Image 1 (cartoon, rainbow, N blue to C red):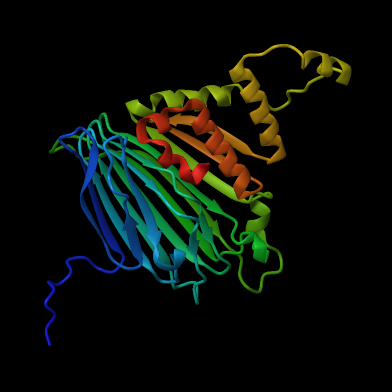
Image 2 (image 1 turned 90 degrees about the vertical axis):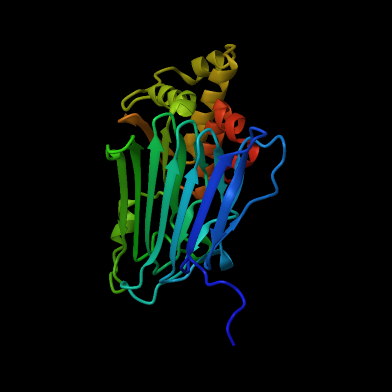
Length: 329
């Protein structure tokens, strides 16, 4: 018996999103489609929403060895899209090194459009093999805020970078009018090669130097200028290597009574928390993109840090809405 439904035009794991500006001057979805194991959910739009909110999910909360996911997104002029998750993207164990779990993301951002991708971290399980490629084609005047981070695994089960392999690549391309080809602005690769099952010394664990989370934040576009300047200024204000406080404890206690500005008080509290969480970070400008690298002893320390930075500056919630930050609160 033949099926009464038309054949699907997409393959397993494929998904597509198209966001455009509606006549009411709010962003809305004109296309949303997905196939197992990928799942996309978007709440009903409201008249006061600042961006379209889409949850990027997988059935069962993770990707099984060999799963393939390919999501394409187009954000049309002046529209805004926020992408979040509902928990860590779990990468389950692969039966062998040759069985690779792959996830591809291709995003086209038109002039005046903006994409904010602030998901929970990827959590590779022991023995997992994962490859992730994310390409962003951003037009002049387009805007991008991308957070990509990976954790050490399931700490409750004693995992500490026990994956087989993890490869992540983020590319940002500047698109121009035809016939000019897109220009590569940024290519950021992270390659984590695990140790063999018979290896006694954990080389990858040693290379991570006690970090439980490692992440990259990429900013691009005029709407991100304020946030980019904030990260660069805070990085410039960090105490440098060799800096030492030679004051006595009595002098420190006396100086602590000096009235400081609200921003200075926040910075002092943040620096103390960074020390507690053993958090390290840097920020640099690369071909018009701001790239922030950070690592912390535990996932929660990294989440608190990136969330506090975004909240203190304030432009992400102002442009995309508070829900865009739900994964970094």
